[in-house]
Image (cartoon, rainbow over all chains, first blue to last red; front, side, top):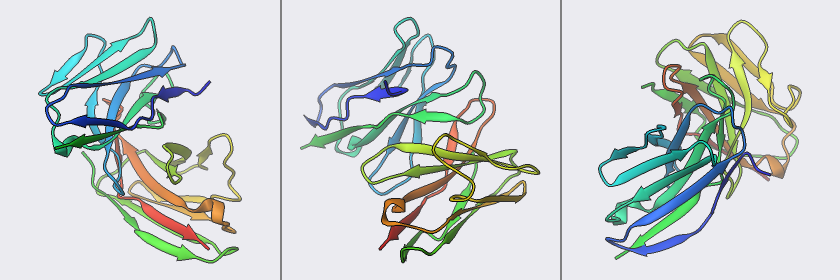
Length: 112
Length: 114
């Protein structure tokens, strides 16, 4: 079983749609969770951290379910500029040592 | 946040040669991380570069193939030795915010081995 698993997609959605990405992780000791965004031929950049209580940043909502070891990202009112690969990322240790485990990414294509 | 500069940004190399990638950070950091992203794949941690001690390698990566230097708190190099086409990949340098765990990445070095 992969340490971090995501549906690779691609997800093809029209502008304005709501889309949800899911991710599961295997290490129950993980303490930090993130969603990164990677544009084509660019380095990954942090989209948002994922907190136990869930968190929202504009059109983006992230949720964490520790019991199920499950993370989600919801994007509302999709924009063309949201087209990218979204990486679910989990720290691989019990502290913030920087050893992050990356999922394979979910590709989103928003169409006019 | 941290500003990370990598070079070269891209290179095309012949099989059997070696390439050294440099990473410069605009602030002092204890640990620097080297990741690899193969075509169509996600990121895989190669090793953690520690200042003043040997790098710590992840399973599947060895020092002879990927020697790392860390001469000071703002600089590191990764060498890809005796390259083969399977080493064609993007190599990314990163540092972590210890408070939040967030990783900051350099722009990557895109390596093509013929």
